[in-house]
Length: 247
Figure (cartoon, rainbow, N blue to C red):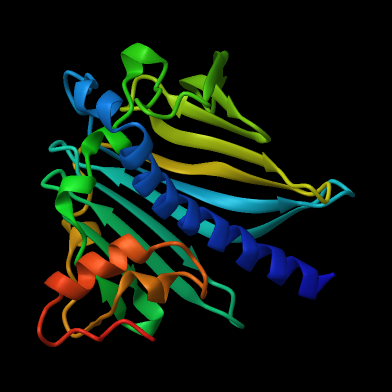
């Protein structure tokens, strides 16, 4: 059971970060006309939110796994960080999306980073949610509102997409304050609120770490992942001291 729990934890972490990459690329390619015409929130509300993920066992017990930190600055830039405190496989991964179009992936424990992406394909409409429109994102019509609830004292809109349900704080920049996913094998995972802090996030969340090796985007996904466009851009724009794409 312990082995299965660790395996599921790693699988779900991979799904999360792979989904972030896939949504960024596919949203631009498929919904480019929609995104260009999208109306972004009139005012971006800055915040930092911390959630703890739990694996919900069939006997009702909740086993803690990884911790997530999501932050949005007043200029629309965002940071997403995943930290595992498992002594057997500690890890910390961070994704930064800047309102300028710059994007960065940082793998702390391996001291790797990727900063060379096409800024024209990284639009704020991919991630900025509008509280005036049920915290929906333009170009992601599959997510549907399902009423409002109060979660940990915060007024939240409930959004569903397949077997995933998420709750976003309507009065705090659409911060994610709860997330529940049901998996094909019958197990469930749930992210629960630890802290929600309004105001500008800590600047360190958006730092570019010094001394990390620059690597191509393909280093972040297993062989066979369809990220050839990102790698092609990296190869033509990568810094002189960056690592080449694996053959």
